[in-house]
Image (cartoon, rainbow, N blue to C red; front, side):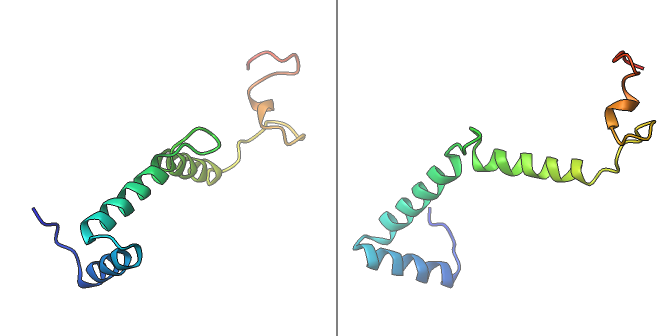
Length: 89
């Protein structure tokens, strides 16, 4: 079953096929295979590109949160969690 694509996409697929001396089907298959391999390749942290994007979105949400009140003058957020002896409050 053919996949409907825009005229621009079809023109680019035909150009890619011509540059590589392939059929349009072969060129599109190779381009999609290469894009999938890049997207699924683990990053330095061992995550795929999709997983890394999710982590980046979560980190951005955490960074946007207001700072914790530290309960003291030292600016240490853990001061609100532990007393002077290191015990939980």
